[in-house]
Amino acid sequence: MTGRPALVIFDCDGVLVDSEPIALRVLLETLSASGLDLDTDAALDCFLGRSLASTRAILAEDFGFALSDDALAAMRRRLYAAFRAEITAISGVAAILAALRLPFCAASSSLPERIELSLRVAGLWTAFEGRVFSATQVARGKPAPDLFFYAAGCMGYAPDDCLVVEDGPAGIRAAKAAGMAVGAFIGGSHARGAQHRAAVAALEPDEMIDDMRAGDDGPGPAAAARAARAARGGRTCVQSAADAALPVLEPRAADAVLLGTAMVAAVTAGLHPDLGAAGRAMDQGRHARRPDPAAGPRMARDWRAYSALRHGRDEVAALER
Image 1 (cartoon, rainbow, N blue to C red):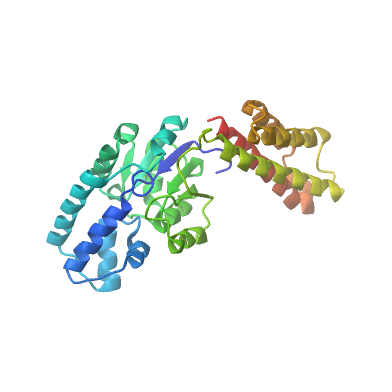
Image 2 (image 1 turned 90 degrees about the vertical axis):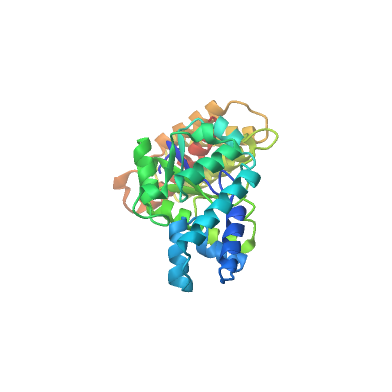
């Protein structure tokens, strides 16, 4: 994805609804009653983000354990009962969805009936009705990219126009395999352990998201801080090019970059409300700073500067959504 996303694809369990601890508890109780004892960390590593069909296959292949049809059906009944009694939306996600000015959908490893139940109990179903996709609709579940390809295609968007929000390694791998940008949400109650966070970070998602909730002043300050850092990065790259006496930057580009940096920093400090002007200034810098493919050895440096400026522009644009 080269700019702001055109479509946001949310995983359901652990991203929209805080269901993973419930599902994990019911799974471990079912396995224990059938003679297989697993600890929580091992279960998270093996089964997080997987469909029940995939879970069943992993149990057979890795543990030599056959989960019978009757046990599976009983587990599903107990799980749905627990969902009705306990499930809640991830804190802040309803406000995020209400404020989001981009098309969005949900793509989950779960059965369609389970996704609908979860979203209904959590009060999110009306936001997603008609835009929910299940691994049962594709040949291969996560970590294969099939589900994300399917969701994007149904919504009418190319993979590189999509941003996926996922909470587990299987989903992050699937998003990357699909060529989509991915934000790793690590704010769910199941994702607070150091081992899980390290496993997610090792996959190098585009962003780590600790909290869905906006602060008292809304989502602007945190995003503005990222924009200011990105703008400063662009300015630093541009300055390094100038210091190296590379004839790659017109004066108006340098001025636009510095103006964008100053304005974004002012937004961060709460001194300047005009996000549109900051975004336009960064955009001017981006266009004036476009790298020249014929530049030869200096192109790598050109491209780093251009990418940093584009990043700053995109972060500013995010503030306006």
